[in-house]
Length: 583
Image 1 (cartoon, rainbow, N blue to C red):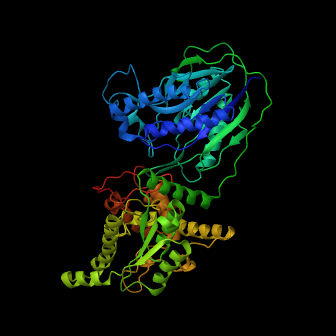
Image 2 (cartoon, one colour):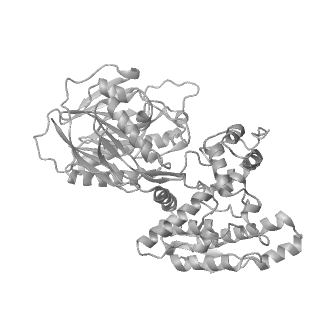
Image 3 (cartoon, rainbow, N blue to C red):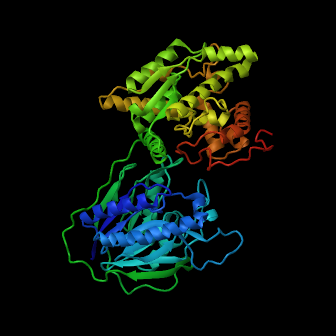
């Protein structure tokens, strides 16, 4: 059987950085060729970054992407890599699309190309366009209608882009019809908790449907609220795993494959009306050689480690790609700010993390001590600035009481953080969790201020699990656990009035988060949730709080998405809305 050494480059890209992304392709192609690769692949929309959102509708950006692709093909050849085919994603446009109502202006396409011999020898666009969750690809792109196949050293390689594997039909069964020996899918599939298990089963199933070895190449890194976890997979035609890349790690997966010899060049129209576009790059098989790289399967991360790593990668990418070097956090001594600080230290380094304790008359002594202890354990920069004098001045002028008095403290802290951010150049991190955001248990322009919310999509019960995991992991490595034990064990409290506890305003988090997960993440209605055994009065209360807090969530900063439905692009409800599940 013909042999082929495949290089899958599981790397990051930055939206809009055409020159920087091209340099990454050049660098990793050089690495792949040095490893003896015969075919090199990069992720979906590698050249432009993903997702480009409304940049796709800007003709100047589309043309810049096309020009960058041609320039990259020339550079690869000039560097001596022209003989090796390189597959990568970019932004293109349909040349002959008919203008019609409802089609994106300019007919842009989520496309990929094969570069060889200094030229763009083949281009194709994603056939299946996702339009659910965070995806709006019907808004931005027109679909492709071909089955691209390249012949490389006597092997026919069919090509696909991300959703082409996730949906039934299309290029997967077409690859079987065309007699392909290898199916390569380039992807930018965002991370979700436990998605790696779903992904593996998907790739196995599609390989069996395609009847050939299947390589699923994924992106890593972060873009705004999205995180990409890599986890590239190669399976044989029966679904057996040949190789699996690590999660959240940049790198190149190189492996030798024995694949069926290509027959007569396929042509015509196949499944889903796809027109086969076949290009022969090298017809003759390589001389037989002893395989050097047979592939390996990287160990999987345990659940808490996987989620925590996603949060670190998301914050690190947001800061680095937006040119921020340091972050600022209000440290209350509570679990949320403590976990946020630990994530920040791991993401940007403790020396670039600045914590501020802002005690009021209601701040307990142990909370102040916990904030200082966190700073000692992590080595982050720490200062204390009491808000008492400012609070007293406001109260003397306004005479506030009750909730207005409580919220004033949070807003003073928010004002102080933003003032320090302006003065010193740090970005502020908002420490709110998903349970608080769901129920509106946060103060606008107070604890909601910031440029990024690292735990925005993390329910409170998971906050505790992640804090315990992080401390345990530190201990196992011989390091000091970053989060003080008392921050984990003490009852949660906003400490805005005497003896205040979260339980005064919210149900027990173990129950609350289960109800919220059904309502927010799964879109279950009141009756369905009650039918699962929850108290009707509690369900009515929680759903009512969630519905009325939509205006607050709209004003919260972006944050790393880890669930199937995070607040933001995933869950879009009108602010002005009189429909209530509670009647």
